[in-house]
Length: 338
Length: 168
Image 1 (cartoon, helix red, strand yellow):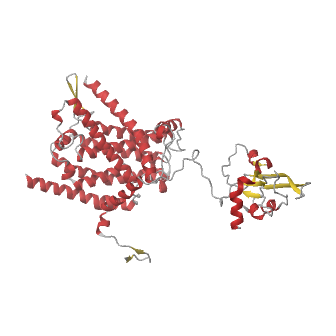
Image 2: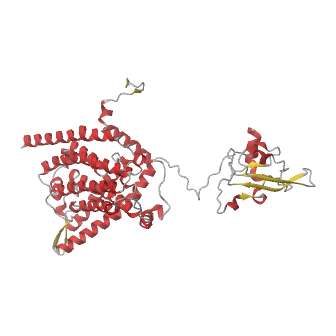
Image 3: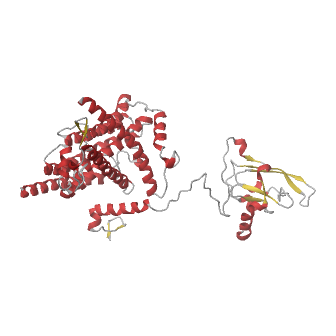
């Protein structure tokens, strides 16, 4: 029974996320177009709403090109690693409290892991393998440079990412994401207590997802696409998919850690019937996540890309000290309050 | 302002600018405003652009509306001046006042570079740059425009003729 419920949850979440990704691509194209005084795709279907299907059809039908002297197996494996890791991270994110079906209480998260935060950090650091391996297996200088940049960038920013979360963990005293949400639901959101931690976290999250201004691994003008230069068809599509999936995951994580997840301040869910409350919670969660996904796109079309030395400077000389300061400060305040 | 050594002057940043985050928010406010600016896109096949008279589209031969005779006297100057050798003219005699007319007048639109020299050199104002710019061919043979496609009544070219009168 538990296995069936878990399976249903997995299928629903994966399908919803992949469908959302298709439409996020359309949204990104629309947002970028509107910010550049253009209209964007509007030909396929009403207002261009069927554009994602045309895109996917094109990707599926395209030839998979493997460069000469490339390591074929790893070349094929790399995008699979990327997408697997990106989707796996979704498993511990709570998108609602619980629903009751036939007297059974079903938690609205796939896996209630008691070290959810650690699990997500582990998964996001595995994501670097997909990119680095693809760069190495392509047997192309641009891809290799992209892969190397990616590994250096991920290592630099993972530290600040991890350290900035610790502030939240110290306040809420748990690694379980749904408990972090319930802790915020009864009081103020963590953003109030952790503004610096939040800034460090969101910056590091941008770097982790390889989005502008930290998209050095792909850097179109200098690396012609970077790690995915030598990919075509659906293998390239998988990289694309994983980029957008990890964008969803990190937006959801930002919401869960700093903006109260599915909870809203001054709304008492316990007074409602659990199923109605669950629907409201899911809507709240989706709206909050959507806002952050939009911020991702907004930033992408606002800021230019960092230079490599600037990236390293920001990572090691500013973000890391800030994260440590935040950590020490939080500790001191917690001790004083106690 | 400070000099950074290579002669270029680099403006110094204020404290708030060096903090970077306020500047990001400033940039974001600019892109947010851009989101609601009017758009410049023209929906091409439905909404077409009508070029102004200065525009040089494909060259055409002017035909007088009253008589239905083309102005061209087949002097061959356009063929001589054409830098890309796109024009071919064959003259013949006629009973009309102008005495000569082109039996064959061909412009290879794959060679034409729309420079307008033919129009400039023509003593009779007989070859004129039209407003037509949508030229696509499925076969290179279709790109050679003969008299059938070049002859255009003067009433359709008034804009350009007026422009030439004024500015040349």
